[in-house]
Length: 449
Image (cartoon, rainbow, N blue to C red):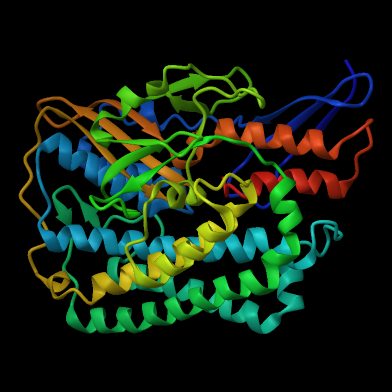
């Protein structure tokens, strides 16, 4: 059977997973599998709960992106109960979405991804971490911590909790934004935008050019993509139509309320995570590297691939530069990092737009809600991909069924393909070292799973 190489755990990701690489008798990679063995169970244990409680329960799915689960859940409950939030309530939700995206991207780029690029993928693991990065550039490290803390404190100051929020409610938002807070937050988000622009320029000049060979070779696969766009085809992180793009760049838009007509869910015996695929392509599901079927990717690279444009000026300029270099759709896995920084610029710009909107301080932030029987799908873009919460309620507003497709879930198939490609390119004749294993992990970290 040959040797099995285990990478356990995968380091510097926002969760728990392992990799098993099976070698044949000649020491060549036969297959690789990414295993996720933590059973969460949220879809079952929310059954029987009052629907209005779910936004305060499902935000525990992820301590890194609780706002996305909180807001998607509120959107799903709105649909179940047939209520539309007033404009100010909707805009406050989107503001929280944009701010939480902005700090999340700082976390991934500087804390999780940077050690590979700043210290080098072949450097010793004892320095290939955030402490090593901080020692290499202490002034930048202090600025990074301050920026992330600033974004977190905006969320906490306004809503009371930066993590596991409860400020969104069915029908809108729990409190209006006061003018003094609006001015304070606006000044801070302008500073966040300055830092986002510094970061992407720093990455384009000091980081990415050193690793273009790795970008073009490590974990490269060819897939479709999924993301959310507004009526003009521009990227939207909070609301819009879902766009599913084939590997050749052709695409179709659909209402996320009908996602189950377009997406299927597959199960593999080695993982508790489910594997969504493009049911509407009519080709089934396969992770074969040479001929994958039904496979698409979510996350930052997917979103800027499916979008015709960005809705804010500086992010649009960055997108144009990116497309001039890599085309559309861009397929190189490590380009997730570049795309992530483009989205960081967009998230900051969008937060500023919302804070400059005079309607956002309107005191009417919540519509009257009455429980009823219904079904609702709440869909938005989590940092790690398109997030879908699908609930059904009985006449008393109690949950009878829930289905969730979490952002990372879309990428479980592509991550397995990426690991297979990386392992086969790096392990030959049974020769393997720590640098090769870290590069395989780098291919996973690009997805920020």
